[in-house]
Image 1: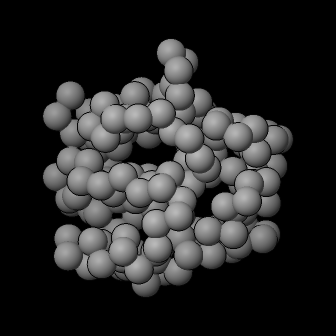
Image 2: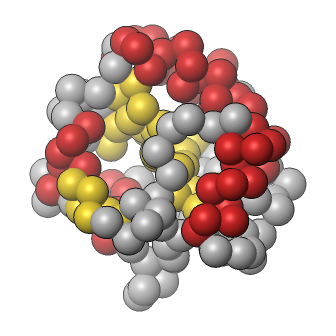
Length: 154
């Protein structure tokens, strides 16, 4: 595979979503959880999305019960929590696995480009406008650093 555009994922209702629909956008892919110590990072993700979305930036939210088992509930429960608590407007997808042989194809691809098991919730992958993965950030990376990279690419 040459880019994320060759991958299809499922929205929270199970419908196929080809990632080629995000062509020409800078994309931040995040494995999220609703009961993680990192869950408050939704505030910063919302701020980035609100600031840059109109300029060609997307946040793609992939809830996962891996690696910390901090995302209980159904896809709809996760979605409602995020809407009610953090007023998220960016796309949220079906809960997935991010590690192991059953990992979602997107995460297999991401961790092939930036190797290493996903060890924490809110690990972020930055993708440029042509679908190439250009960065991996752990949950402790300051959002200012990620925002600088987004600014450079928009």
